[in-house]
Length: 526
Image (tube, rainbow, N blue to C red; front, side):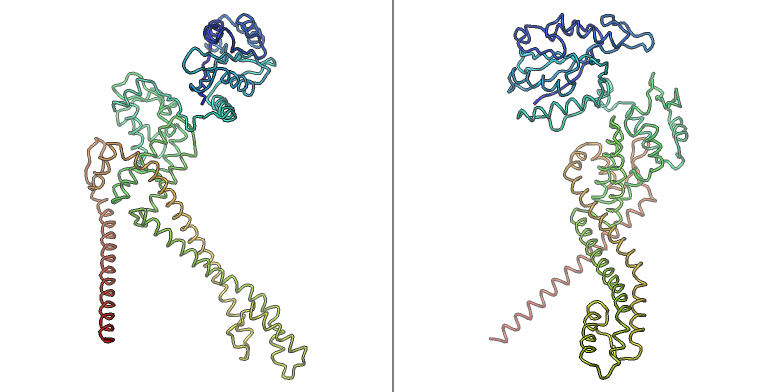
């Protein structure tokens, strides 16, 4: 297993080369390879310096900030490739050289040095920012993912394990991490305030959101860049830094589609299992919004989860078994609609066949003394019309039977469009039910228990079960206008329970009567 990390060397490039080419760390320079440069300190340093100064107007040793940009250019890209204790220094060095050539090519000064002085041997790879043709290597998240992927591929080729689900490095400072752990982060409070204000009826754009935040005590030092801070904080921050869901573009998207998110007024209308599911999905939505990574497919997950929970609520689903029953019913409904549509669509072919052969068949029926050829032709047409002409069960000896049959088929075909629409609705309902079932099964396996382990969410769920809704000050109180919605759901559940009780009593009476009849028959036989 290999782990790769990157360090940008802006200053003291020679000191860095001296460290990785330390003979005490790589068994007297035994595990050192130079690609497009020498493998000793002085030669490698001269090669790196020559290439850097050829394509850059800065001095390789002068590490002062650049006058135009105020920044230092990178002198050396330093990569560390670490292995576990099962990998020998020889194999580690061989993998490091192969990886360096595969990633950076053979046209760039590179030093690969394997340090074996620790319990876990590791490679230090010094990479020149420019190759011999002046092509520059850029270090960013995308290039780091690329080099790690190539490293994993080579490790698999050498029968080594890889890190299957690597964790991304946090982008927040230790101070912010510590304040979040102690639940006193003002940035988290700002994100919570924005999440609540977005669902206000009078928030229709960014400007109305800013106005509402000012009423909540926030000060904007730069409205165009959305830099805000609460009263008790000296320096604010850009709202976009709160996470993926707080950039200008995503805030506009969220305001335009605020119906796709769950807040207290929506969750308080749910009952039982639906409440626990709604709180858990809302927490997952916040996880998506507050992640620093820009990944738009996750917002599609927000909309999908909203539609699924609404489907669960509208169909009175309170368990996975209820969901399975609704899915089975939707499948049967689609099968029936498809059968009706196909039977009606067959009549279009019947009418076509009847128009082609009906007149000839009617004329042959009127011939009284048919010869052998006419009789054979009549029998042939008869079987064709029986199979695909729709005359089965139709009296072909009555007057004007052919026009009447055609009129009947035409009238039946008028239902084709409505049956197609019905089939489309049934198919859409079946698709939504199956998608909801799959989503619910996956959610219950992966995220449901993990989210509900959090203490504050258990408190929320318990208060929602009691018909209470969270307020701005952190307290809970009942909302009378939403109680009616909850009561309607409770009434439906009571009605369903009563129907189940009546069906159970009827089943018990039927079994009792069947048992009494069996006893009377057995007594009669004796």
